[in-house]
Image 1 (cartoon, rainbow, N blue to C red):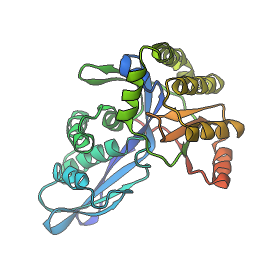
Image 2: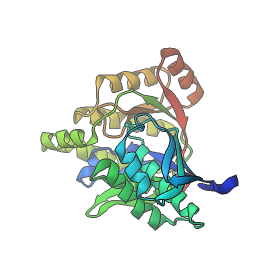
Image 3: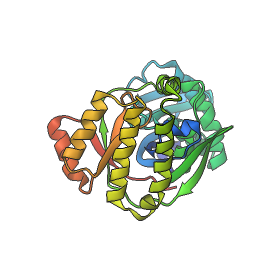
Length: 301
């Protein structure tokens, strides 16, 4: 799938995917492994010629209107004059799906295309990190790195940011259920740190679970993965990052036939991911209950 396209009238479009953490949240902060995927939802940035100063023409992102960070992010990548910017996204904002990381990478790709060239991986990661800093100050570097690389990735925390390596992952029937609440990653990470060393055994168990499930991810052993998702959720609950809203969606997914379900991201809100052999059945049940939900696949690397 081509992330960059050109249209009439000098327009260019660039897409970058969002991300989900499948396994290993919070434990990864302490050197344990985790698994993330780029998803087939994300952000598209379109650049088109305009007269006068460059500006955002439209941003279909909740909360983006009037956000000075968005203007600063655009200004960091596009020329000061002559460029109109349109942004569209299919990612929920503030739910741990890497919405700002996808925007960062899409901006870098679009800006390079505007110059008549293609941004390589290093440029997407380096310049994408600059954009992420505008939004988050001290980002982990994970979100935009997964977005730029695509595919499924194993990662560990290194001294200079996340260390990522490609993984072979079978097609997984994943459904995302949205709590409608945003979690504060920095606050949640700090809260887990404050609970150490009492939570260290649970963190180590999460890391061991990730390693144990790598073969099942590669072969698509859905029953084993489902049990692993639910066990990972139990451990995340034990370290204090789950919420009643998350627990309710996990229970709902399991009651509807999901093989496993867990929060994805820092917790405190955000989304739940469910492994369901018939995603459409879970989506129908979610619609009937009024729960925002959608199926996701892996955006290829």
